[in-house]
Length: 622
Image: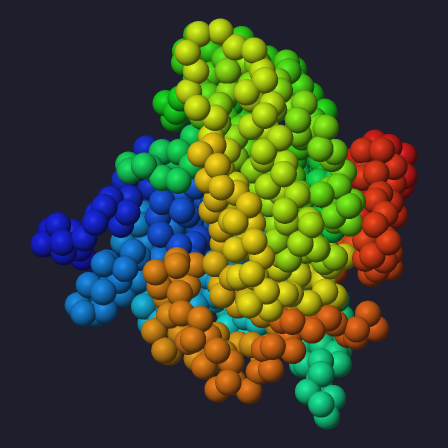
């Protein structure tokens, strides 16, 4: 084992040295060999961001515990070093290492990266470079670690496909254990790297990019992605957990030694989403909805609080308000833990799911503010994106909140949605002013603080596997104009306005829609010094445009022009379980301003019923 030595002088010179030292409460410690004296499989969960962000990720906590439950597997964690530590590592020739044992990354059998965000791609290349592991899959030797990927961005992994040995499509708990079985067989039989990859490609949900070849027409348009060998599946169907009540959840969560972004116990209520917002990739790729029982969730929270000492429980899902037993669960948690001063954290709620009882329960803990996501200011645009909420829903929820003493509300909107007009943008401001009027008209007793409405906007990014995947993005000059228009109308002492940079939104769209040719541009950006493109202070729009030119990528066409509905799509090598016919039908409904009711009210024949699980089975549509 190659262990990196971190001397005290180095650690004293960097911010938050605890990011790199491990030793946290509930950290797993194993020797290099198992009880039989055999070398363990050394797996590194690699998160392409700093410690505080990565440790807040639920997938890390799940995979870390799941793999370490295997006797012959030792899973450790590797995070991207912060800029000050990265500079020291480059100057002192210190390789990338794990926080658990400071094992050098190149010494692991498998490096498993999670693809959470397209702008993290250069960070992944930087981490491989720091590790001394060849960046391109074709350049790796038998002695190099296998570099694998999972996470939401794998539903179009083509821009980074040439960097990975294999990619896991969908939910990872089961497929990871099957991959460990395959790797054990590799070790036992002495299989070569390529022989192992061919066998791994037979595991449902595993995509081995090197076994596929892309084709283009004379104009450079993508035509197809086909297997190079007989027997390799033409499409890779996503893996999905059929019974969430049987899925692994760690009972002893890692407790960091420094404050992280989300420092609490996580309680995952369900997976999937029943609402069908047409811009939302997560709402499509994680279908169908599968819930955990209240009884199981209660057991999980009891175990995790007892093993961690946390004083806050965060309820997680794509749309927490849609959990069928939310009120029962919240009341149960309050009855059990309010006397112990454990806070209950509710994420952004659907406005039509908010009741005064729910807000009353939330107000009994810490009033940190309420977050809602109307997404659009006008009803016409909300109908177009299938955000099935009314202005009256927002006003009623706000009225409940004001009556219970809430005075801070955060509202999320999206600019540049298909069909958006200037009237839709000014409707955002109109809605905020109505909230101010409502707050002033709401009776209250005693002294209260001034109302704070925080408006936050991001830009629409067409994502694969959504009804809007064929849409183009608005151009940067139009993005800037829309931001300025909204800012002009949000001039009130009760309001603040935060917006997302439009230049990074353009690059994110290019990476989301790209094919394998994009890898050259990502590599060029890496060679030009990119390592943390997700942070505003390190992001360079000009560097990306230069890389696109160097790689001969027509990025303007890729980002701004609509995709013909009949065109082949590079991400269709994956199978998200959603029918193309459904996505097109939803796109056309959007153009007509029509809505659909969502899975809780009627089946929309999206294709998820073919899995015969979750809400589809419960409602008898399979």
